[in-house]
Length: 340
Ligand code: DGY
Image (cartoon, rainbow, N blue to C red; front, side, top):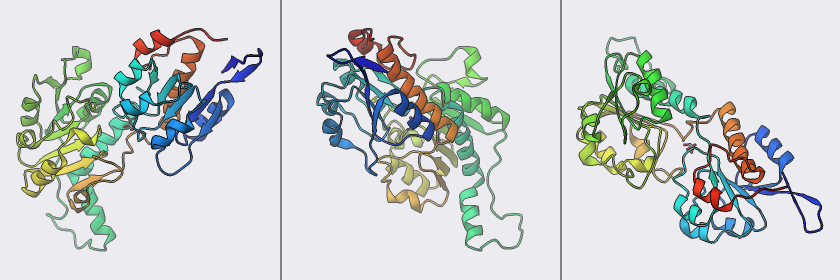
């Protein structure tokens, strides 16, 4: 990935990566770009505004917040952005488009891994495996008893999928094998072949009142943030299970804790939190919750595929073949020109 310098020599494009990807991604980035990696333990934050000076491309991590203010203050050299995530709620896309900054994300390659983890959380929450394992580890595994470590059978329960995008559909596919009865709510109804046999609910409220297991897979958009609040949680059948593999800010966590305390919710399985990694201490007190540290896409294969896809996008900006993982085509059209 080169450009011409003023004296006609070839110069490699400069890429700043604000974290350390897998070895294969590091190797490719180093081969194709003049690359620098941010290796500090903390996110780069405002230091990006200085450090990125002279770099044409920046590949950020999902915990790097690029709000409108930061985007407005990015060095003029930065002409393309990638994010090592499918979610882009940490980027003000409108501001990026206004700044004519194409942004590439990493869709599809993590769908199966996140759906696998969602089913893991459904199973763990339904069967209470986290508290059962904790008892075992404490040496409290006593005599076999018919009532020891009881959970719920999944077969026949109604699974409500909130957000039937790629991940929601992959969850439906897996959940059918466990005998769950499928329901979903989405902004728009899907074509029948994508519904995977799930019943569409026009409203979120209708889905909630039909969900023994409620699985959140919707994107964190301004419209949906905080949408799982106390009024909506109250619609769930008593003892329902809530699973979240999307974003913590979709849920009013205080309302969730209250619903658990009042016995309205049976169990929770979550991979995401508000303010992660500094999560609300009340999470840790919930004995009927399985808590994971945002590992939905965390397999060797998937993290490498994500890094490669982000690099493909950045590459496409410079090579003139727009990649499909471009989030804001208007920015691309405004900036695109042929290189080399
Ligand atoms: C994603 O890719 O959006 C995952 O949730 C990681 O943040």
